[in-house]
Image 1 (tube, rainbow, N blue to C red):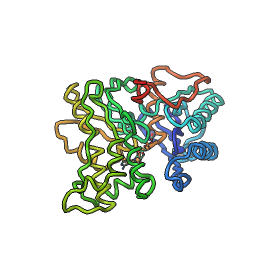
Image 2: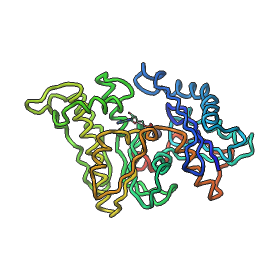
Image 3: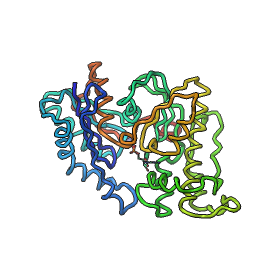
Image 4: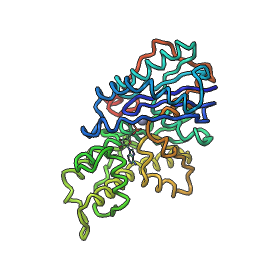
Length: 339
Ligand code: KG4
Ligand code: ZN
């Protein structure tokens, strides 16, 4: 079974063809970074307009690179939630129209479940495992019992991990997109130049939650207060010390979840899963089985959408033409659960 997967939840216009949930026949990611760069952040209106202009070309390229004809596609899937609503609507509507016109089954996909599935395009991973979902919009520590069944243990109570990277980079003018730029600068910096405060969320309901607003404020407004004697202020040192604190915060909650649940398999996903320090730290944990997507599958892509969709289709599950996109998913954001 060959599935066409479409992903337009944010600023990547992506389409891919994946066979039997695993074999990537093509994976086209058309990035909108040049369109948003001058604003140092994704402008939703520009994003959805570009998706409208690019989506047909992305799908045509995905078919061509897979050396397939339109008749060779057996099912169509697109990201339905969470994401920018205008951007989601483009990919979802395109996928529904494609499937309807060809008489194919159609499935709307949860973007974060797709990120968690990304490493499974390369390896077989047994459930249950602990998921670390870290992107520009979400920071989630969860227990996964199946490809479509996760229990959220912790989230961020304010900014998402990727968002914190993006905001710090934007403030200092390090470049765009922020996560990657900080990661690259940090490789040349001293991670102990600054000792930024770790958020102290130890109380019952926050056992696995993280917070980034305090760290962001420290890095942006009170930099001098955290400079260690003998260390110097440089972009590299700011980036390295910030990266270490941001990732250590995340890891402390993850390790706590490992201790509490006894689950020793970790699966990471989302754009921040590309972070070099995060990958190194987890790879060094010999008592854990850790799975990361390859760098090419950390960010938004259609392959993870097509891959996970295959499992739904195997179960005979498809969605109707009335499926609407949704910008949010209950449980994925702390404030929605604790109004
Ligand atoms: O999953 P993704 O591509 O889109 C969303 O679903 O949000 O994640 C994008 C986020 C951005 O905030 C970006 O700055 C961050 O992932 N990111 C990184 C790195 N590469 C991308 N953050 C830290 N280190 C990186 N190497
Ligand atoms: Zn994403």
